[in-house]
Figure 1 (cartoon, rainbow, N blue to C red):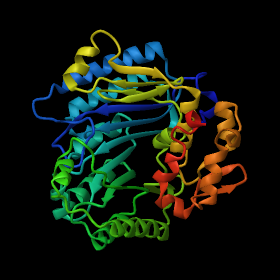
Figure 2 (figure 1 turned 135 degrees about the horizontal axis):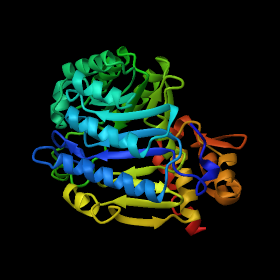
Figure 3 (figure 1 turned 90 degrees about the vertical axis):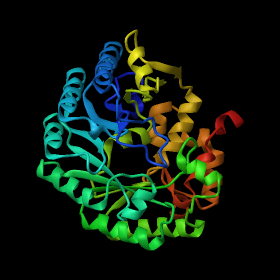
Figure 4 (figure 1 turned 90 degrees about the horizontal axis):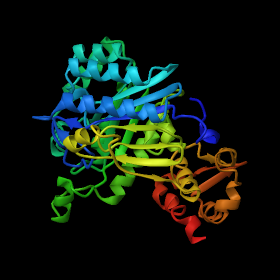
Length: 393
């Protein structure tokens, strides 16, 4: 992917995030900006999204697009004709694609029949990420997923039959009633699929979710802390043994199959953010869109649907660079930092860097810093060292 690091502010974003907020049902752990599909004004939303694209590129024309990521919600709840309309608008307003563009779409197993996948492929989608979460049906129903393991295999078969080979699945650990053995089985069944990419996340109990309510009532049977640690260690060793590189704290890929779009975020590079509740970052400006479906539709009638937009100070941008960059196993480099901020990394963050090196949570190689094996387990502690580090100093 083209390196944007030293060029922010002088060229347009080369990555596009688009939010489709509809889903079949709300999972018990989900705090994303998503709404159950029934009775939603889907076509009105897609037309509003088209208006936002039109206004966005008028104010900030795109360059050559390297990656597009359609997230949600579950974008694949769109019907084939809705999907076709949506993908056509993407191509209309972001027409200049890199030859090797990565065009990803999130999907829920069971929402991708052959007709829909054919429309996706024809519209340019070449990477699909399935939210599988677990390979035990009892765990799936316990977190509010409506698919089962049969849906997983069928959906992957359908995707391959449609000519889509760049496939990824998400798994979760630390789920209620999940054991280390259950995770081991899920990892084995996932690896047996031989996919190029896996994302594996630990459950976070977020506010405004059913799980948060149950947790507060002491009714959420989460694994013990030592079991959750054992799950993460098992996950890392299993993936490594199977030839997958842990290129980010929660992501594993065959060489060259990393998610290029997500790397845009982790390198703190610019991207367009479109749709209800979407965030964007361009030319040191961050924005967040209006969240609700109808409020978003209304807002696009009079202009860009912004809830807020604000400049990111150089200090904040430098802290962001550290926090997201250290999520990647390759870490951060003084060279990239100088290109982006015209400052030496050690001059700005010498104190927290030294503290983390001494604690054995970071390791240094030349001008590169990355999490150590121990640091991966305590990533949030490391990232926290850089939050507010400049204002404190």
